[in-house]
Image (cartoon, rainbow, N blue to C red; front, top):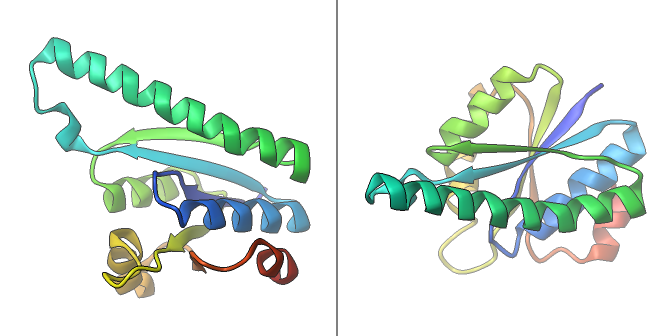
Length: 151
């Protein structure tokens, strides 16, 4: 089964990327993999403190994931899987794609502020010609109705 990979983070545009991935998956009989990445700089403390911070980060991610997963299950009939990685975001995204040959599309949300679409969209967009799968960039300010219409 083909899967859509979408990144779960604290950005506003993440919501549209999640919606798009779930809607496309529901309409095409695909699955959704939700990836959340814990940045390495969160662990530059003593070992005991780092372990506590790592556990707290995982708890936050799992709670955030469950909100999206419930919506996907209830509204779209999609049961997403959660993958949590630690490291640099672009590197971990590519590793997940390499590790799961069923991932057919990477979905990212683009930010709408003056500073640009966001670091992931910028970094992966630059290397989109050599990505192992297509990249779909979803505008962060696209309405829910418009997303539903185009999926």
